[in-house]
Image (tube, rainbow, N blue to C red; front, top):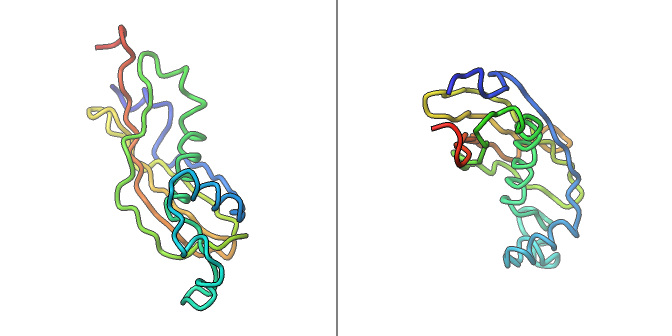
Length: 151
């Protein structure tokens, strides 16, 4: 696979923003089963170092996934025999809390194309409405061959 087969270039970037609501956190808690007091108990968290409930860190990672779809999804038909599939996130760091009502902006920037390994790396940053970085990660996107096509 050549770097040109990715239909993206190093430096390409997309952003996605979402305001995190109480219902977002409770729905996520219900889906995952993570009903920790940190996320679901306002009284407990009122006397914590944060002073209020915070969203799940992995909910923020879910928003990172949305940004990757915005980057690669529009190009899927152009990949001619390959399908982009997330291989995961490396170096995930939760650097600050996400409070209910915060607007989180995800910035996804392609940082490296590895044609010989059929993958792209991207630096992903989540920042709140005050510009504070709350999470960072490196995303690994891999191109896999479609059955019956390229070998």
